[in-house]
Image (cartoon, rainbow, N blue to C red; front, side, top):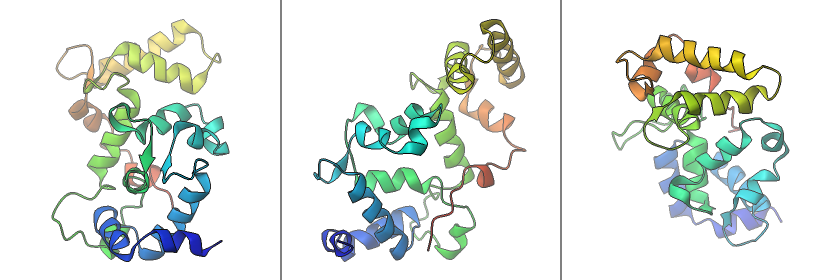
Length: 195
């Protein structure tokens, strides 16, 4: 059973994924094994339903938003490479030192890319800005019925007021980055993957 993962993933694919994501050979093999165990349709791709079976995502108030991040542009399936690209955002930044990126592109787990990933969780309509309504929807997902609509509105208004530097009533990615400049995003958005 353990050999299934290594036989379906060719060595050159592993090398390409290593270059693109910064994951080590053993991490890729281990994550491929997890990917294939989630692939209930055994078609080499994961559906939203496959992700919804993950208990940690099922109970996470932002679980649907996180799952959506794996499916760019309305796709309904994600292959292993897309799965790895999304997970790469959560690699600890110090891993960049061990896996030098030779392509001269910014690593997927850079501060900017981590922030962009987080920004997209709030940008529900993907128009590159977070409106008051989008902020309210995400806050409501996170707190449920524990806070009144009036309190949520106040939090959303205050957040936009603090972040909205250009006065357009929305939060752009640049404004989002500015607000979070003192937050240790590198640490907060990292998952330790076994080597």
